[in-house]
Length: 124
Image (tube, rainbow, N blue to C red; front, side, top):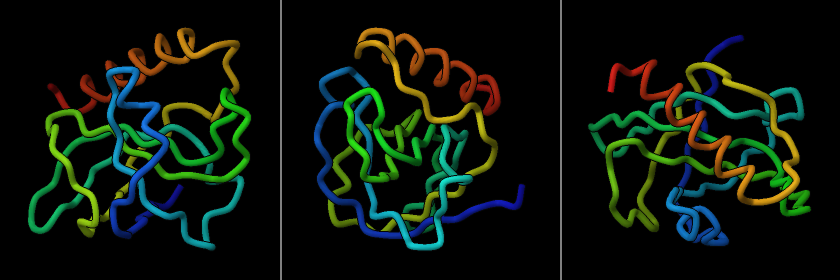
């Protein structure tokens, strides 16, 4: 897979990640993103001249029955409000496909595993 880069301004999301201890930054998904791109990724977020390790969800939020495709990134070592900031999301490696979970607690357990995998990748 070639490296995908999605750039945009951080916008306010639905705040589900924040409520589950995984606050995310959200950007609009460009039209070149297709269904075969959907997935959970180890990623790098560029903000100005700085780069931050992250986990990114690209696709619909199936667990919450939301069909709109979103790009949400959880930064592993930065907790700061970034609304309206221009960022680039660099998708490095796909961890798994987008999946519907039976409930948000099972999803949270999976997110913890995804974050662990990303931290191992980045030696954090």
